[in-house]
Image (cartoon, helix red, strand yellow):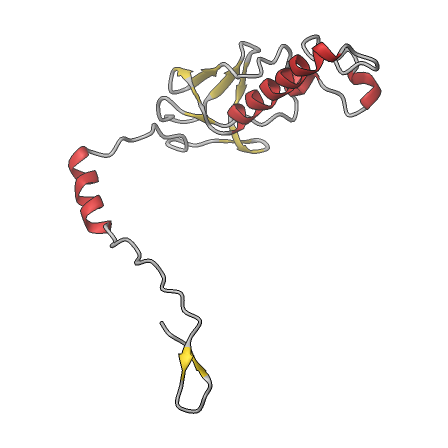
Length: 161
């Protein structure tokens, strides 16, 4: 149950994914399971593009396991996966997704990434966070006073703030 199994041609989707059954005349008892399976497929895609995946491997040979679990490079063609690097790179490096083989990681076609393009996430020190909270502390907004206005000197409504 993954997006890459689905076809742009509606008729081809009748048997594209064994966990989803939207066949004509399907039993009412299968509707909930099919809807939940579609929700799971959408969640896998969401997590693949949200940066929820952390890499493993080395600083020159990254590996990762996608939530959609691609089975071939052909099925992965055109797919987008966002990840968090576990370590900064020291120069040109490769990425191996779902064990399908290492491919060069590039910033543009035929342009290898350079050293330090990928960075390991940094956790701010606790004291820094404390100072930042204090410095950025803003008074909570006062509740707005709503009024229909009051009569001014010349009988016009005068706004009240």
